[in-house]
Length: 252
Length: 262
Image (cartoon, rainbow over all chains, first blue to last red; front, side, top):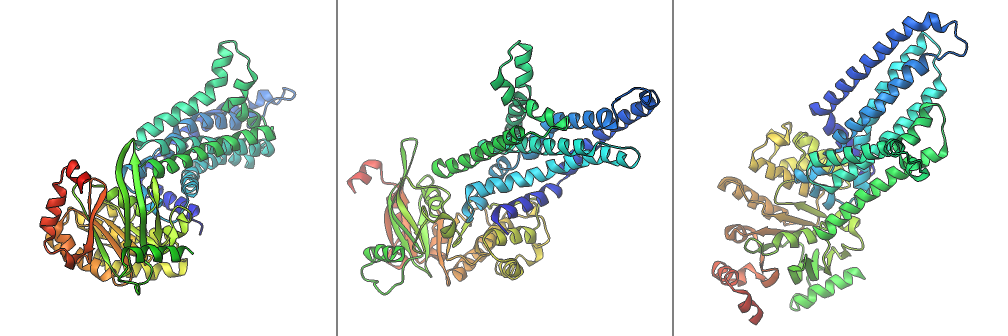
């Protein structure tokens, strides 16, 4: 098995023998399930009225997409918590030398750490998706749109996870890493919003914003520019983390 | 070519030992500077197979920095580190496969049991899936960890933590084992056991042991290298240093002006 997959598998195992991962999953499920049931209840109450409205919105628009949009906000909190100990925790526990002294390159270590953290985050996304998908047994869900939203959320989560890993590589304090990841993630998510609030309609600011690239997926639009944006952000953040490990070797 | 270079370096330092094979570890004019301060200066050292080298020095002498450069965790500012003839800078991943390293603080994963942790370490060091079980059993047996194998590493005593750290360092049967203050915090019985283990390990590989405890060096080292203020002040077989303690104290108490005169 490749070194990074080994690190990833070990990190997944370490996460799930601790209560933290289970608590995150349980709280996220509880919160999303509550929102899902409230939306479902409201939808069932208005369904008879919607039947008479031409081109009315369905369960996908009224239940699934708002739920997944809420998940994107929740990920902003969950991801820093999932990534904060990836490298910062190793440094704090003095266990980073095990990885640095093994015959594994820095980028592979970072990739392993990324995949280990991403597994938990992706599991949250999958669980959230299972809720609206369960409705498919009783009604027609727009599966294409759900697939696009799932892809968008997974890409969005990968970018946030990579940012979290980069922050975790930068410090030996997990709490500081989590705070930095939260600040950077929030900044990127609200960059566009802030600019619009100030009356600035700048194409670059719009392009830099996370939400600009997530929203099309939620509307069922899969554009290569959005995919490239998330992949680019993920790659840059992971390279940054790799550089930090290079720096630790070079400067101690 | 690299083997040849390592051999040459070894022979240069030991002209009377021409029949000894290439050293497992060879440091050639290694220096390390950090923020304008020289931590290690122009260090050249060879360690052949079957030798336990004691790296002796007071706190701040540059022992840990030297060890970190030996295992590739820290890049030397100048100079080259060869492990089994491979340049650690140009072949880092291949060279590191032949190194077992126990830092001052054992690098344990507290969430895993001893067995799970050692299984991970074995795979990390490149042992194939089919040989992991055997390697783990061997390491557990050598470090006498049988009773603790199912216990979480975070719940172990200092002595057992150190043994697990040692087990991870030897699990892949490296040709070079680097130990940073391995006996620190151990009780006398544990320290004795650790010394015996180090002696037995040295039969098949080279061992570098950093310490400031003279009794550790006297009990298990073949050669000693005394570091002071980042410079190698003396290196000789233990048998040639008649009064190691007085030699060490003399070097350790030298002032910078005396050093430059020397």
